[in-house]
Image 1 (cartoon, rainbow, N blue to C red):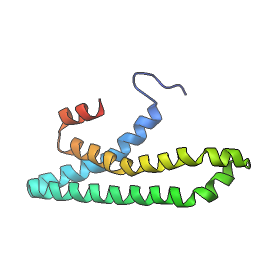
Image 2: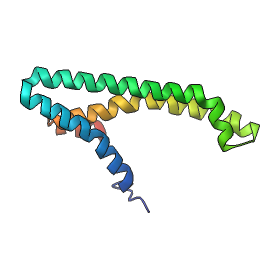
Image 3: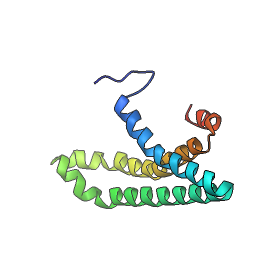
Amino acid sequence: KTADKKNGDPDEEKVRAERTQGGTSMVGGGGSGGGVVAARAVGDRLIGWATLISSVIAGLQVVLLPWLTPLFTTLPEVREAVQLPALIAACVQLTNGPVFAGEGILMGVGAFGHLAGLTG
């Protein structure tokens, strides 16, 4: 498969859409039944859970790094060289959960202008 430069990888876009769809349906459902207060409570829970889960995944990446790198290479130089990029990836993982949840929440409340501004 080749990625279209303008639209990105179709598989990546599909995964991204599926992740945000949960937030879209949950906030939209909360907003229709219980008003703004219920929608805000659902959004807060989504952000909280997403932050918790992404923090656990990032922590696991850092803790398991000494056992993961030998699975991919036997060269000590490569194991040492991969330490910093792997730690950076773990830090980036911390933002993934809240960002995807926030994207879904913005879609759920219909704030497409704000979403377009944030995602460029």
